[in-house]
Length: 198
Image (cartoon, rainbow, N blue to C red; front, side, top):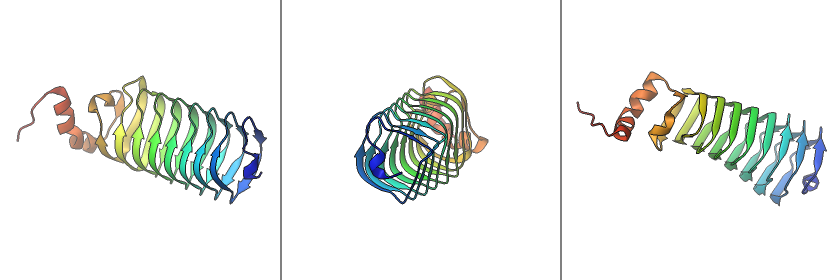
């Protein structure tokens, strides 16, 4: 596969792009079937309404990777460095993000099923309005979390380093460790209008 193959409406199956330089790219309605991207570099890349099945991205870096409205099934992102990964309104299932660094991971109004984030450093994780089923974050860290306040079932944050939480009331349905609950206690109390004293 060549970077030039990523054009609007392209259907790419079992293709491999190694060391591709994508620059700034916009292509709507691309379909990727069991493709692999390795050591690629991109600037402002936008692939709205992407359909991706069984696709893997390894060791790549992007300033922005915007996949708004995407349908992503059974794939993996590993060892990537992304300034902003935007999956607003996406449908993401059976997917893994592993050993990666992402400054902003936006999943606003997304549907998430069996998503795993493993040993990754996330600056801001925005889940506003998302529907969550079986999402786990293991290892790594989340510096700032915007919880869903949507439909949350089985969202486990107990095994990651968790920093600030915007709107602690949105943690309903989330699994936290005892240490995380103690750290967030003052913010949760303030949200409830309670006063904490020594």
